[in-house]
Image (tube, rainbow, N blue to C red):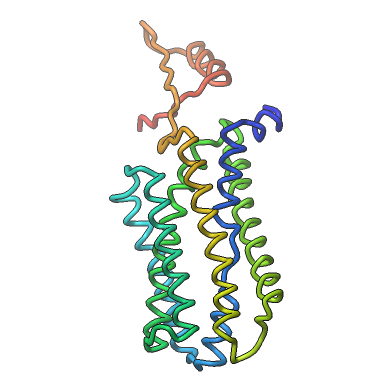
Length: 248
């Protein structure tokens, strides 16, 4: 199978565009973490606890998706969870601008737990869809391509974050005006909303499959199998999708 046939497929191109818009928008990770460490003096033990909770939320989200949510509509699941993550992002602006008054440790751990849980849950349907778009014989190559594209989008997100923060004037400083925070978060929110809308439209346009269908071919013989019959099966296997069955 030629490279052009693999990656120039319409569904693959649309899904590649979807993955880019899913993760391209700038974020506030560096700004938020800097303020937590320098301004709010969050202790290392709290940071470690948040990290442990984040890994726990990933496992919970994976188990929940596999057990209950995999059969649900991917469009709705991705859209709803992405919207929740946007709400968590808005909450960080309200916290840094002191528009809400919550103990810093409570807000930080709660924010990490909710954002990690719904963020991972929003990506899982896309991971499943990506496996169904992989062409036979090049599954590993195509899946690696989809994941690499997601990582590339994350790099673009970090670069956009740095450019935007520098342009607005948010640098390594303890005191940042609410106006600068609002400009930064406002632009990020607009780009995030654009990303959610584009992902929604692309998901609607794609023929979403949650399971990969393969044909099973069986060879029937009206006599006891001999060496020649096994050779026939081996030859046919090179030209068709067969299922290996362990009879032991």
